[in-house]
Image 1 (cartoon, helix red, strand yellow):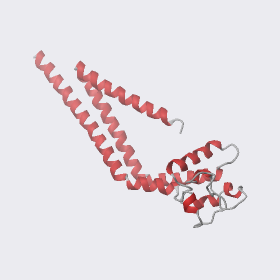
Image 2: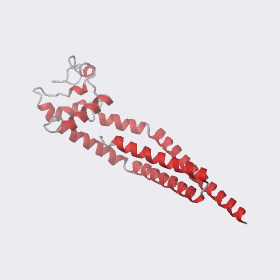
Image 3: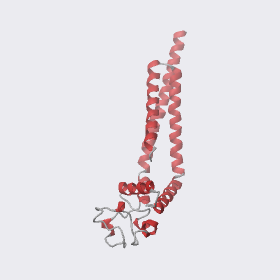
Image 4: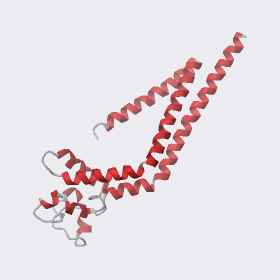
Length: 203
């Protein structure tokens, strides 16, 4: 997506801003700023926790939506005015070394395949060998297909990767969240200590 870099830049800027706020709070010794910093960290923790829970709850819907999106993209592939979708599908298949949704035969039932003059065709982005040597039209399952093109579907590849790495991903996310909670607690304790020290000086 074209907006993805801007989203990452925005998230990075917020993280740098909050980190700088934490440093200023510690140097200045203002308890109010420290309480505010702890609040920021706690809000980020709640957002991350909510996002993680939502991902677990709606994972099935996300998988279904991804599959429907791929299906629509295959139906619009190489059509006039659909250059962006065509380029996106080609890049997806080349980067993930996959072809189709569940497997390469999904392309056989698309307008693209019907328009090639030979039935059972897949795009050149499915080729695992050079385009000149690749047979990607008039395919017959089991006939040189596995040596010329990618056979695994993109949907299955992505879903299998997510399911297989859900544990490590969850562990890393939990670890990051733990440090944020720890930072909030320490900031709160430091602010409380500063207030106590100021009260003792006045007394």
